[in-house]
Image (tube, rainbow, N blue to C red; front, top):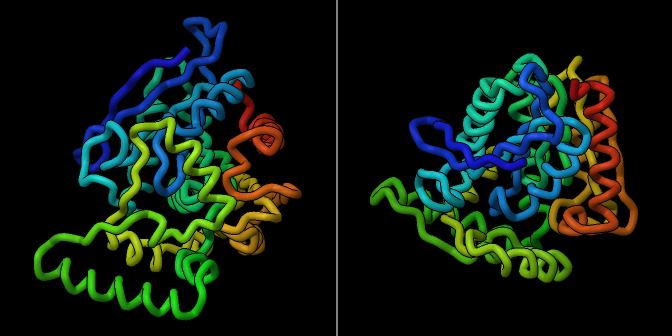
Length: 295
């Protein structure tokens, strides 16, 4: 069962959906999981499928739109990594307030840029008891450099420097087509475009300040602070948008308990559709069952 909800983060009202498993009794207190979408995603793009699987496993699940995205308040379309971390922490607080949820049993799941966000939140917020990061970014600067030719990289740095100076003088960041900033490979472009066509809330432009925000966001700097709480990393061997080396670097720096799963023969956006989706959620559900029992 899905319920529309709202809550606040840094003074902005966020739009969310609370998913309740079937058969809940008034006295039940289940473990709760917050789902975090990627850089230009919204809660209705992919996450309802994840929520369905986790509901079937007995968990109460919360999805939401970050500030400025989807139906949430805030500056439109800004991808601010630390602001997103604050949103996730607010979502954890809200989820823990629900009468069906045990606030001492909270987990987080994130995909793509959300896979980076949940690592950061897990490291700084001890309320998080279990984490799953799927095709996530470990080091923003390394990631953005890795998917560009040298001339593209230097052009990007020059463009962000000019925008940084502009923002200081007039308070506005220039907008650019998302494909100019994120450089999707052919496989990602085709799969993402197909999914986004069916979702009117999907964003096609980003402010250039996203580049500065991401160049300085490195979850692998803090991933070791998560232990002894468990973290699962899932990546794919043919991910050309967020290379598997990002998850591998996070895994190498994380403490135990930890696990790295590399799916074979899939690209970045294929983790959202079958057959890769089923493999992702089989590993995810097993991890949560082991370290965050639903009941």
